[in-house]
Length: 238
Image 1 (cartoon, helix red, strand yellow):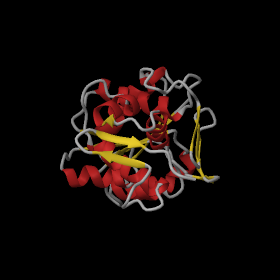
Image 2 (cartoon, rainbow, N blue to C red; image 1 turned 135 degrees about the vertical axis):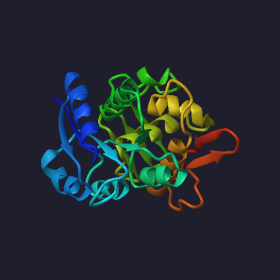
Image 3 (cartoon, rainbow, N blue to C red; image 1 turned 30 degrees about the vertical axis):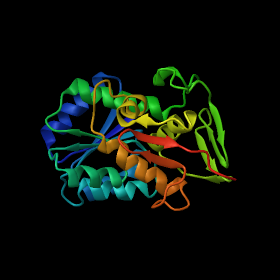
Image 4 (tube, helix red, strand yellow; image 1 turned 90 degrees about the horizontal axis):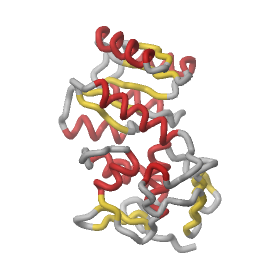
């Protein structure tokens, strides 16, 4: 049974989420303090974290940053703020997605299921990506090797240490190497958004991915921006 760690200082929201998620077959653990959440994390060993931005002790952004130092567990931020600075800060700290409050339970459940789907390697890589040139599980592009079943990504033999979301983004881009993929397509194929979503999710994750993949992230040669469209993967030279 998957464990979801709910970190929110609003007791009513925490109790509501626990009830809903347990009815969906998940196990839940709740915490109302950011610093306490960091302390509890190694013991709880969650499969996913729902993390509020505004917390006593440590704010959600700092909690995400500290957890990312040791774990790639999926993190969904819950925020009452829609300000660009707060959203981007949470994503840059390591969050995979965010849901603004007040949220619809059905939408949150869809996001949670999407994160679990990505976190588990698929036997058929084309299943969730509409056959978008992702019908293989093993990709080699120059010195980059990506194995979806093993969920490994290396560059010149060195582990890139990607989060599940970064891995999926890398796989989708690399599978269509040389092809420009729009941000809206990436939101659908990687995040599972059925309708248009926040393109900041894509932009920040590309930035995070470049920091791990590129020799010079400020001058990207592998994951390139296609102005007015989105991004494309360019085979690195040996």
